[in-house]
Structures are given as C-alpha cells and as structure tokens.
Length: 248
Image 1: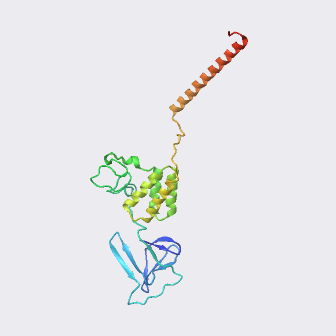
Image 2: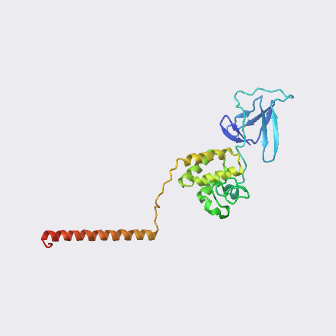
Image 3: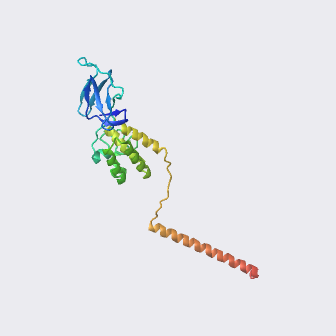
C-alpha cells in the first residue's frame, strides 16, 4: 500500500508509521513532511496479499485526541495504486490463464476462439505477438520503477516511434489482467488510446529494396530510355527526309 503526500504529491510506500494522540502519523521519505489522519477519521491499513488488516481509530477513549497541526497535511491513503507483480518474463509478457493470449480479454475454458479478436486458440503462435527486443527491454526496466510516470511516458514515446503502440497497449492489458486494481496501468492504458487516435496509418514504401529488385528496376529504366532514344532518332530522320524532298 502507498499513501499520497499532499505536500509533494508523490505516492510513497507506507513503510513506517506511528500512533500519536489517537491518530495515525506517516512521514514522507521524499520531502520529510508528516501526514496525519484527521481526528474524526478512521484509517484502515490492509494487506490484500496476506488477508490481514490493522485498524487505527482516532476515537480512542483511553487517550485524548490532539488537534492536527495546521502545517501537517491530511493523510490520504491510495488503495490499489501499487499491486505487486512478479518481474519474470512470463508475468511481464504472458497473459494469465483465463485470458485470450492475443488480446488479453477474458475467456472461458470451453471456448475454442476469442469472441473479441476472433483468434482460434489452437492456431496461436506466441512469437507472432511478441514486442521487439527494444520494447521488451524497456518494459523490463519500467517494471522496476513502475510508479514513475516519466518512465511510462518514455516507453510510450519509444513505442510510437517504432510503430509498436499496439504492442505497448497489449503489455498494459497483460499487467491489468494480473493486477486489475493497478491505477498506474489504468492511466497508461488510457494514454495509449489517446496517442493511438493521433496516429494516422499510412502505407509507406520501403526505403530499402532488395538487390534483385534494384537490378530489375535499373534494367527497366535502361530499356525504356533506349526505346525513347530510338523513337526520337526515327522522328528526326523522317523530318530530314521530308525537308530534303526524298519523301513523296
């Protein structure tokens, strides 16, 4: 779990806290500001992975409540912002069971094809839907600093430049399939959709042609030039014969 420091507006891991005057006090490791729960609120710290929870109530009859300092911002706990995901390649690039391996939509065990993208599951080839090595490396690096939005922006910019925005969108869908409450992944997926609307697909002729195609094109140009030259010479000859009276 993380909390949002209202002093620097960063998401900070909730690593340590203390009880003071019947309220919960957390110090931001980035800016040093202390955030505390309001006197009339109850903050519940939950650990979804282990199923345990702790409750800190400001309405403690055994201890008097102290007013929050005006210089301390109110504690704001952000639930679902950080969801632990294993950083191995299978978790990063492969949808979990129960999802289409191509579009990552939900699937039933009895289905033989995807109702969303039409994929016949028996015909799926994983290598046909893998991102490039550059994008794979960037995604691995991003997973280690998931909360840094600047890192997400750099990855999306890389994907747009390489024409792999759709692959980046699939990677975020894989993340959400494994961590449905990941707020950062939801925001990034919306950004993928926004950027996709800015891209106008166009057919671009390959800049590099094979050696055989280059030779064929050169030969065709040479033949065409020769034909044009012969026609030009024939016309000139006929005009000269006409002017000299050789032609009736």
